Length: 285
Image (cartoon, rainbow, N blue to C red; front, side):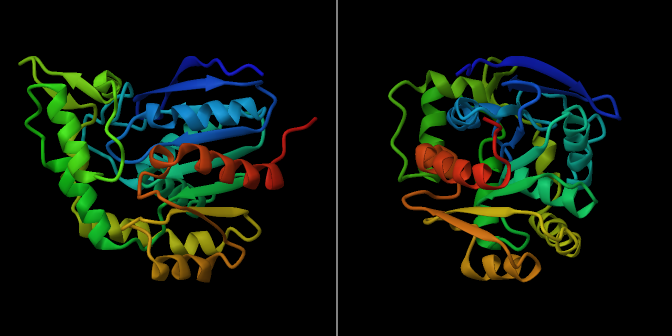
């Protein structure tokens, strides 16, 4: 099975260039992967390979303001803007599309669906319209803690370990360079636009919740919630709130995983999502 990808560039309606890794047959059902806030498309590397091996077409893109994609000149990083970016990519795919979104990527998918987009299936990775504000704030605290950059990549390792202490430290930290950029001063900075944080936690939470009425209109849409068993973002009340608008919601808990589910337990995560996709958007023999 072919698992190679090629880099593809997409142009949004406001002129921003989005960069993606694309692979698989163009007529195969497509999985669009959307990473979380502060991450890049490389966080999906293992999952993307698993989906390609299963015969799916994969579009794995850097969100606006992240990685190799362009930054908003006016600092517009709202969910509605991100949902329009998603539509710009999805509209180029001729096959059925499943959305797999982690955290901010999942919220983007929810906004697009609330605005009328109808994929063949949706997998939300540790995100619900009403997440635990304490977990959301912890993410934002981590993202805002080192906006002045790092002197050395070892400092990056320490920062990540402080946020995610249960995950083993990388044997070769050079792989983290894909999530970093080198500034003119020679310091290392996260590979995302700091203006993403301009929207406060309260407004971000309100934007998430505003997707719920539109989600209720997506009657018959297969939805899987992949939840890290150790997550501090998705609690039982958040799950029940989502189930109230999506009664057919399926749940897949990943033991030993926190909010960064795919990074914590990639094999278990990919297996759970593939089971869901094969049921609701199978690849033709």
